[in-house]
Image (cartoon, rainbow, N blue to C red; front, top):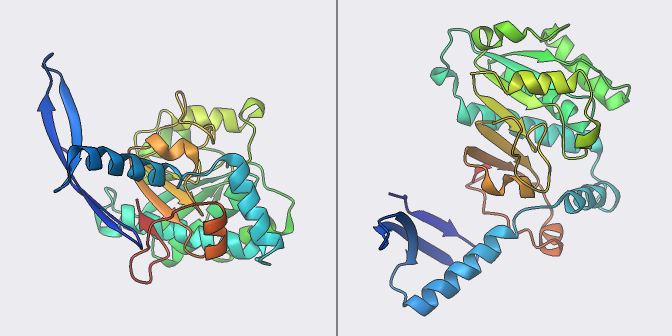
Length: 283
């Protein structure tokens, strides 16, 4: 049976109790009804709930517009945003895969970084994981010439985080506990993915250990769920979940508590309330 879910908002709280029943064709059907409400109010509130829930998800253009506004109007620095996101990604890994839960004796993590912003976020994530006593290794086949990207690379090198010169395809399952996919972000044109990234995607589809993807799983269309992409166990959405995450069924974290309220209101994001002082929430 489905577990009950409590959705808390600033102006109201809805308690959904879910039950299972069978229709005349003996097919299992899931039905959710709102406690202590009549059937008309039930369907009205479910419709309202779905409207609120769906408006949480960002399109590619909205995500780009929000980031541009943060950088230009709110004077956030790009390095500042990448640091916030990267640290939050590392915290999500500690929540999804605590050190005590790892299958292997050594807390090894493989971080695969791309050449763009997602790759920089992966570098920051690796650095914070090292601070949290994990043992990250970075595979970064095409390093960006951007000064920020180079700065994050040097920071990892100074913390003695190893960089691989090639991807040990046959050894990934044996050598690491987790793969962090920080390769292709929402800005990537899927029609133009070339080597080495197309080969890495093929490898990631075959690995047996868990994959945690940053913002958008590599190979997925930002606007819709993937039919032929990698299958991450964990997704860490940045700022707001993207539309492709609507049907994601794994562990889903959101890192976006820094987002100014006026931007949340302007784009009707309806983001969930973060617990306590946490900068991360599991959806």
